[in-house]
Image (tube, rainbow, N blue to C red; front, side, top):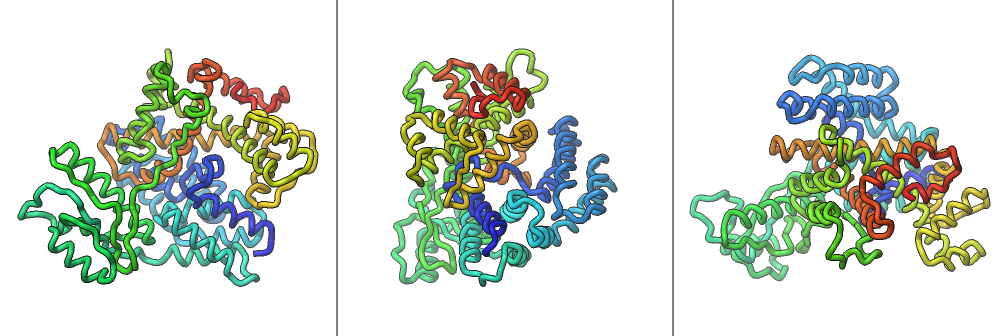
Length: 520
């Protein structure tokens, strides 16, 4: 890939799939095809009184706007037809629902090929192309790790004549392959006695040892009292291991409340076809509230009651079961942002959280750029940035440099792309910031809908559950981080901070106020 455009799409895809990518550069939304499935699912939930009319209406309107812009769905006529049906009712098993399902299937058939064609033209921004392709591959079941390896390898080793459009076409071929069936054994180190009549997935120690000896004759086998043997259908081995980790988490939680005897799994598992055992402990969802440490609030025994409660409710979002993560994280947001007069409009918490995170996004990106420049260069700007102690001061100085119109460049493509995004944002904040708030509000409202499905219907099978946890967890952490900082440093309540964000965002671009100061 020789063109800057191709490099930009490729680097952003690697950002989306990288485990260490900061929240401000990750994907915040699901793909359009999955959002269509989510809407159809929401229609069923509405008829069982789990979701409200307002919730469905918001999702429908938001999705319709996405469909209009998403060239992967089809040409203008095809998109218009789908938008027309989205505006109608969602009665389960009704004519309109069947029409939407059919149109969605047609869209999926060549979704990536259409985006490849657009990438070949190079007219749609690299950011839009990468988000569409990146989210679609995750939403059909590929793991971040597998996709990162795939794009890294093909981006580096494909023929020089191959461009990003060719790689997207290869990814389309990859997406049509059937799922792979994986046989996976998780040894157990402690378990209650197994009943005589049991699911064949539960192996006693003798059967587990025989299985390990047959499939892994040269491997050192762990000490075990039995094993769980599961068959998983997945897109790749990383995804299969993630699914097993979820099964182990659920079973461990079940046994914790169902018996006084412990069920303890070994920290590695064995996959037929792989040479060695795999660690499988579920990776944290990266809920990061570093303000607790920066302000020493982590040692404060007298944190405000609402923040103290929110932090406790938030803990499962980082590594807990999906049910606890969804219910706890929304409860934390609602506790912070629903105040006097808001009792009948609890979803307003999603809007308020979105505004705070949008303001935080600007500061996070400018801070990353300032620190990156200070490390990479040795000119006067880099010297001034290194002389500043606080990240806030560095971000403010870097924003001033962009506003002054002075030439700034970076060697790394990722920083160049981030600089382009921030330069455009600073030039037209009144146009771009509302779109950022809108994307974030979509994500937090999705969390609210998932919470209602979990709490009111006990539904843990939503098509959007896994994607919600993947996209929203870092965003919740970013918002709570700003709330803790505002409380510890400025003695501001969450409601007060949300009011500041709303007022400042409403007047952005009019008074020339620095964007780093949006939460001030």
